[in-house]
Image (tube, rainbow, N blue to C red):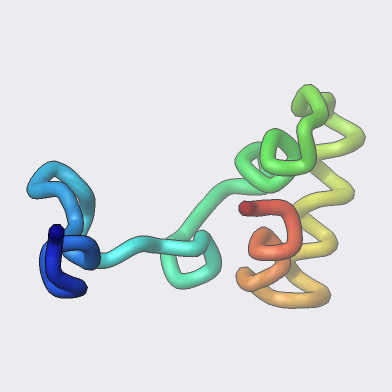
Length: 64
């Protein structure tokens, strides 16, 4: 039977630190695509304004 330590080990190919999105720079196009929509000029402009208004952590609403 495996010990608790063996069951909690992460595979060697997994990242040590995971990023949620807001702590790294991204473009308004990235925000539009995170919502599942195609980046049209209107959507990109709306996303740009949303980032300006609410800050870069707004993308975390749409990321898993």
